Length: 165
Image (cartoon, rainbow, N blue to C red; front, side, top):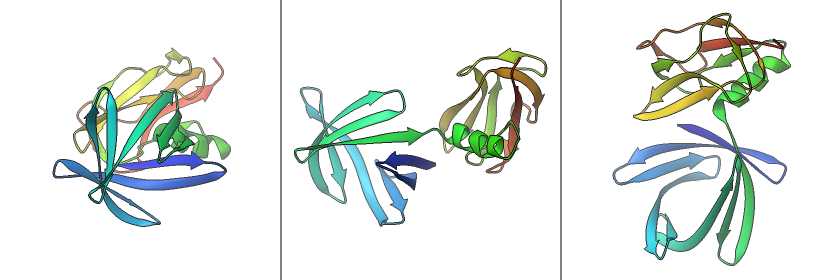
C-alpha cells in the first residue's frame, strides 16, 4: 500500500507490503525489510534489515513523533483519500479516488446525503487491509461511483461530495 508523509517541508512517498512476518518498505532511497516488535515494558523495537533500534512512538491524529537514537523526529501521515480528494478539489472537483486497487467492503452513504468532515463514506479492502475513506470537507454526496463487492483500480472514482450543504 502506498503511504505519504511530510517530514519538515518535504513530502515522501513509500510503498509498504507484507514480507513474511514483517514488511518490505520501498521508496526513492531504496528498499528495506522492516518490522516493529515488542521489546518489553510497552516499548517497541524497530528492525530495519536485521538491525534493531528501540523506539518510542506518539501519535496525535495525523502527526507522529518518533524517538530513536536519542533524537525525536516529527512527521505527518498524509491520508491517501484526503490527498486524492485535495488534488481533485484543487482542480475544482470534489471526487474521492481510490488510493490503491481493491474491493468495496461497505458503502456508508447515499447520493443526496449530507456529510461532515470525518464521516465514513466507503470502506475498501486492499491486500487484506481495510481502509475507511472519509469525508474531507462538509457537503452533500452527489454520487457514489461504486457498489459493495465491486473491485476497482487505483485512482478509480469512489464518491463525489459537493462542498457546502
